[in-house]
Amino acid sequence: MADTLSMELLELLRNGGVEDRAGFLGEAVRRLAQAIIDAELEQVIGAGRYERSETRTNQRNGSVPRRWDTPVGTMELAIPKVRQGSFFPALLDRRRRVDQALVNVVVEAYVNGVSTRKVDNLFQALGVQGMEKSTVSRLAKELDEQVMEFRERPLGVYPYVWLDATFPKVREGGRVRQMALMIAIGVNDQGERHILGLAIGASENGADWLEFLESLNWRGLTGVQLVISDNHFGLRSAVERSFLGASWQRYTVHFTRNAVQKVPKASQTAVSALVRQIFAQPDRASADAQLEVVASNLATRFPEVSKMLYEAQQDILAHMHFPQAHWCQIRSTNGLERLNREVARRIDVVGIFPSRDSVIRLTGAVLMEQDDEWTTSRRYFSVGSMLLLTQDLAAKPTYSTAGVEEQPQLPGSAA
Image 1: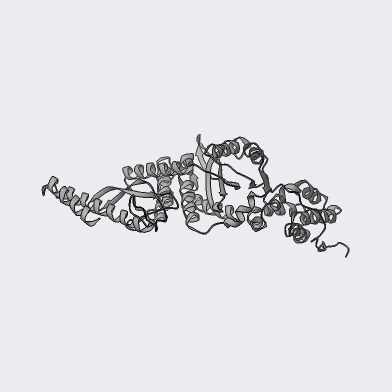
Image 2 (image 1 turned 45 degrees about the horizontal axis):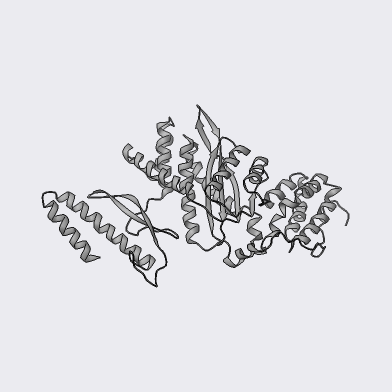
């Protein structure tokens, strides 16, 4: 590599001469930096370009352009892409996409009439002292292209899909409106967790959800066996139309929370304990039997809760038809709620977005960063446990009362 680089620089010097020293120095720095990046990539993947090697762990997959600001000028570098995971050279000071997005949202907010004081406070919070319009425009274009590529990338087989929405405020049509930012995450057949997509709609109605889910199908999402979401009618209707044959799991924590709100405060702890016992059973047959006992126990004093249990029985226990090692994760929204909290934290910095595009720019950047972290972390589920999904999940269990636990007493009930 050193010999090739030396020859290139000598040829560059002969062609440019000493008259254009600044141009020569800038191009020389660019070529040297590019050579260092390529050498680092060779070490990461264990093989050079077009080289056959037993130590190879990955393959090149093209490159993406990136501007690099230096004391000798701004230069274009080609950042190599790899087929699995991600690569970013240690030579560059990585400007996080999220920070770029916040800068662009702040500048756009200023253009659209947000008070100077608020904008200055936001810039100060970001550590930004001011930027030229051309730089802001370039950053916005680069980031929008990255987010679009991320949102339109091909998908694949994802047996588990989680759906949820958060609600940023957006200035549109001369007024501030609360809109639905819809997010989907999934676990693929290798047990790896990924952000599948995001979209923003005027409201969390069935039409917006249906359009979003159909866009995932259009990008190649297949093999969906279980969809986990809250009990929103429009969302559930869209799931049934978009993922034919897939089961639907209602968030058990949300269901329990909704159930205890139907009873007096003095009885909420006991009712919550009763409902949680249903989910603690070792198999579906035991859970069904436990639900029957709990619903019967509550029927006299809290008939509304008893009715809720019977009506939601199939939806809150759907996860028990899947590998037991997955139950805790696929009946809850813990992972998605943590992600939503991070999105909400960034949204709160802005307050009111000047446009829908700015919402997508910022949240897309947040989700891209999260997806990168998941890609380099351990699998969400083991490959072995994911293989169990290929077995016949429709096999019906043998029902029994095994595992049914003694019920805690409600306040004021007879022992």
